[in-house]
Length: 61
Image (cartoon, rainbow, N blue to C red; front, top):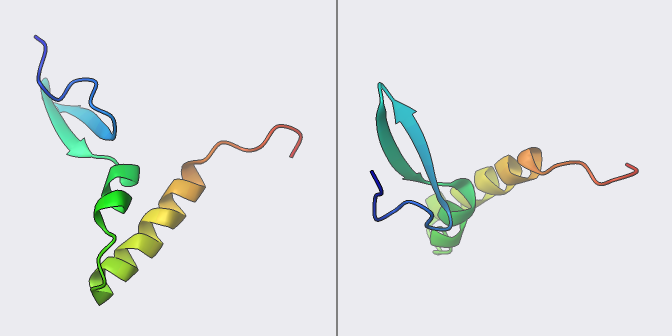
């Protein structure tokens, strides 16, 4: 079964008990956290660290 969010950039899908659950991936959340609130600043810092940790190593590094 094809869903409207299937293949949407930035959406990750986790299947739980056979049910596909779409959620915003870290990169998409980072785009949405560009506000000036203190909470957004803390969230951006966390998401940036998460994305950096997931980044594959550079060749030859």
